[in-house]
Image 1 (cartoon, rainbow, N blue to C red):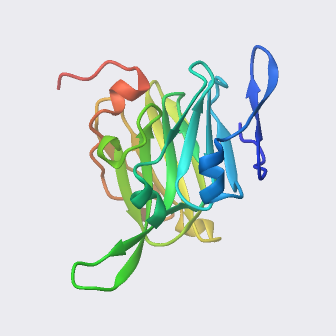
Image 2 (image 1 turned 180 degrees about the vertical axis):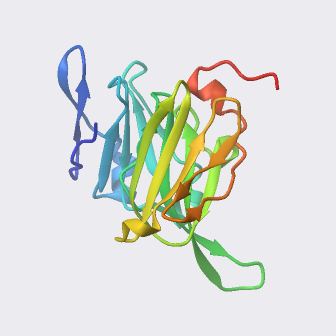
Image 3 (image 1 turned 45 degrees about the horizontal axis):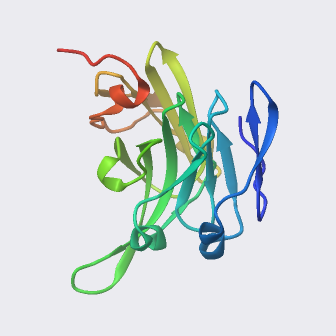
Amino acid sequence: PATPAAAGAVDSPQPDTGWERVAPPAEYLAANAPLRFAAASSDGQQLAVVGTRGFAVHSRRLHRWRYFGSTAEEDVTSVTAEPAWVGNNAVAVATRTRVRHLFGGESVEFAVEVFPRHQLDPAARLCRHVVAGEVSTLRAAPVQGHVWQLVAVVGRCKVDAIAFELHADSVATPLRQHGHVAGAVALPGLAAALGAPTSNA
């Protein structure tokens, strides 16, 4: 379930106690206020919040916030849609990144990225799938067992939706969506993040 984002705090749904107010750290808000999106994991134990740049994840059990990458990476990356939880242990975000070129100038790249909840550093990223434009809607849904499907809607036109399946055995199978096929993506580490056994094949 998702929650509306406010400038200072968000209400996180908790299955056992109802609603709990969570205040993002002052240092994150100082650089990235106002909050634009917030989404809770289905078990209510994790809350992802998005400011003007980067994003952060709160663990209810540990009472701890984790931040996206370094300050430099956060400075060039913004999240364009509400995050989508892949189970309770991985979070998918749609990103807009300014890419600086070696010989000057910069360009913009749009992508769907999946991170384990305990480490939001790009080095720990489970996958990164480049898309044609800014993602306006991102959704994740279980297909069967530990197989998940992510659907990213580019712009406002659903005909441009891009979909792919995330398998627990580190294989990504492209899906056909309105005649288009999304590229296959390698997902090392996704099984561990989802708490699923890894295939020996």
